[in-house]
Length: 256
Image (cartoon, rainbow, N blue to C red; front, side):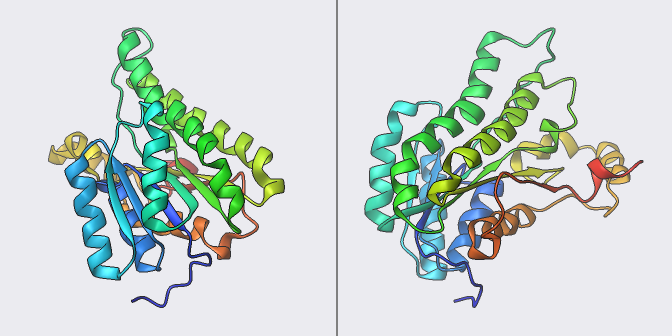
């Protein structure tokens, strides 16, 4: 077991927990002794992540197959998560899809699906978790936004809109819940080595072009985001709320 200090020992729900940033976050939290619930549309992947977290780090863990766009399913999934973890004092909302299409050619179906998974699900999940979060000291929420919510990409209007919306969600939720001891923050990852991003950099020339833009000259790893989320959920971040933490190797703050 790691000697990492995380503060509270309450459980954390991680959406998108079957792969990429979400899976890395499940493991990072479990390493610090936090019970975890991995939620994902990929039920088998969520179960596998939870099983590995429990076996490696000795924490209570559960994998739940769920489409987070189906907010009516939240009550049952929250109850199952609570029953396994004992309590819920944290949320990392990382579930997401790319949502292709510019403002000229995006379809209503893609728009609704993308905003439903990222933004609507995030808002409704925070809403439904308020009783649990306010019941436990040092509770915190982290929403996974993106640098695409700060500096937009023309070809993915629904994704950029959803990620920008998550920043507003985090600020507003932080303002509303702060007096009850719940902190809410956002992380804005840059170019991270995840299954979602893999297709974009499969070509060597494309990968080289991305690396040329990054001052640290490497793609980010899921662990880079997971460790940031773990910090924001910990007592070490006790005076941080309504913040946007950019984790992008310097891309959005430098000239290239």
